[in-house]
Image 1: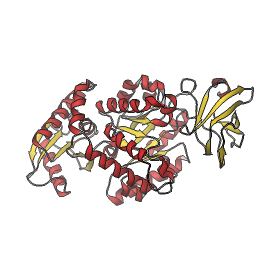
Image 2 (image 1 turned 180 degrees about the vertical axis):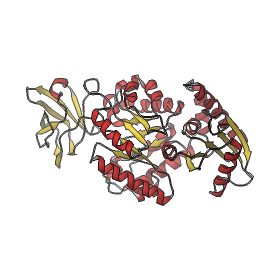
Image 3 (image 1 turned 60 degrees about the vertical axis):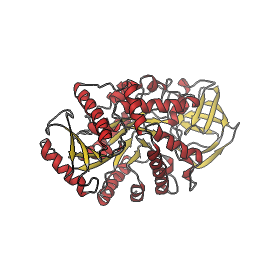
Image 4 (image 1 turned 45 degrees about the vertical axis):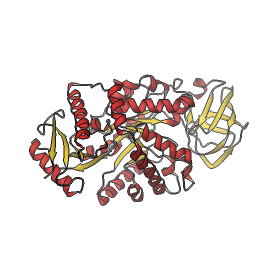
Length: 455
């Protein structure tokens, strides 16, 4: 994990679908120690399983061929060749003859050809290797399961007790699903990341974004729920709408899949990562590449290099101007309206005067996320006294989280953060910087913009 952080990992995702909660808590504690040792903020996100249907454990791995016949049986016992158990009690009720079911991220597809009182008989349309406990995708509008599940909430309690930074909510279908998590607003509570992977989520997208702290474009199940030819356009639309509302957007699933075993990605995968950056995504996420891959740190370093090069080619000015013209910049409260106005003015001012940095002084991180959506080509220095805010900002585009002891009156705090930024080499004497903050340490909104020359 230390090598992964050094290679460029900003946020570590703990997949609670695998292993015990104690294992995840131990990894969280190890990551905190590594972060302190390296002097670098690293966010940690707990990914809740959600109403994910999985087949019973396959061990050793099985190779499934086209035209093989497999019985699907409700249960929790290990699966075997010819019979897969499925941990969904309503399997025989909700799944029908003619349905196509995918395993994992869609690489293997079964068609149900017969329903009996004890099993669904299926035929393999596309085969592959099955191992572990992969998911079995059943159309979300058929599943009689809620999000989050009771098991999710138990896992969540354990992770919140251990100061988790972010929580990813699986199979969100409505804003109500997000509200059911029942956490305190960030940063008092974790940042809630809604995973967009169902048709219902697409239909309720704006409401879900408004209720969430961030969004993940979970292309695995989303690509199964929707037509594959629609997926690239859905990805672009989700990211644009998410970023416009000041939420980080994560692009996930099969980004560098071949690097689970290979030392280099395919050309198509490298283009996929770069195009996600050009789409405006805040973060790109690895899954199997680092969970079971043979060289996780090398994969991360490879992704970082692709993303950094894409950043250099990014059309910053065009992005911000398109965002202004899009009509999506709609504040959701009076305080948000003030912050929105100030961040837009800051982007324009920083661009006009060629500022060396945009300095944000924030408790919640909202100001940083608001300015980041304009994708300024000026570095964003994010100062906060809140440790969890700093770790949450590791997922925000372009943000450099930096710790301060407290937020005092505007003049005193600005002098302190400029001295700190100068000491750490982010700015130099004579540089002009744009400073965004509240007029005092108690301001509910970012209501002050100062253009300051660094002494």
